[in-house]
Length: 70
Image (cartoon, rainbow, N blue to C red; front, top):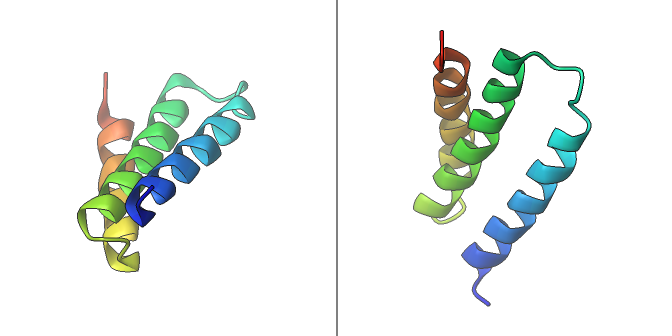
């Protein structure tokens, strides 16, 4: 298993565990968290694990998730 696949799998597990603790969040808050998690994973994978890519992806994903169904 390559490093990027390990990072992706670990990120998915962390995302699922984190979302299970968010049962009292509003739909908008939940969409923001999901968007940030997915964006962070995508940014990390696309930039080869770059910290800047991960943070940038999380920010963009969070903004998109926040604006869904507005």
